[in-house]
Length: 232
Image 1 (cartoon, rainbow, N blue to C red):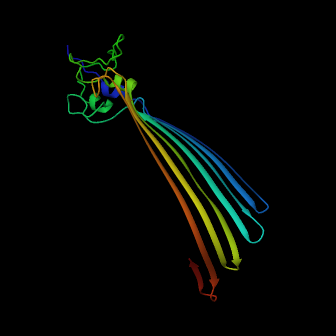
Image 2: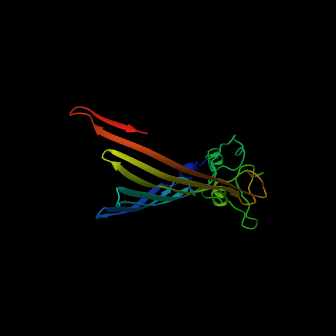
Image 3: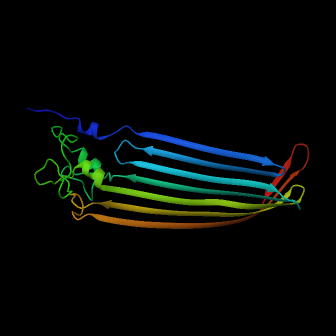
């Protein structure tokens, strides 16, 4: 007898997002500071899809003697994103590698995706409803294949401002921004999408930016109605 199954609906889950933040600030005689921490957990509606983010920040300023004012900020961010691959399908299996989405949406309604086994208990290979196993079981893909992006970023600046005279200030600012991204894509052996022997690929990208700024600023009052501001 014909019996439809809600395989697509049952495959997905309810997404969940949670976040926490802490901030500390204080000030004293000619001194101020601020510290903060943020945490984000974002679980997507696709099984195995999750983002974890940690943010750290610190800033402070101090009014020194001899008309000098110093300030600085420091920030550090860690992003860790992991998900099963989600490419497209031609109808007879995913194209150009594994895809939980591509293989899922072409699963017939009569196939009980969530009730049937998806992995050979002896070899660990994927098993599905086709005799030739031409389509990779999406549940096997979730457990055995992933894409991961890990990003670490450090950025901030330090600044010195000198009041030369009333209305005239000279500022030097040093900025730094370092961005490191590690990208990993992998799949265990036994899948029908991609290399049957499995694969493991990594890519790393690093970018460093130094920024030096020297700025002179003058603000003056011409009369009761007009003022002048000049940056150079």
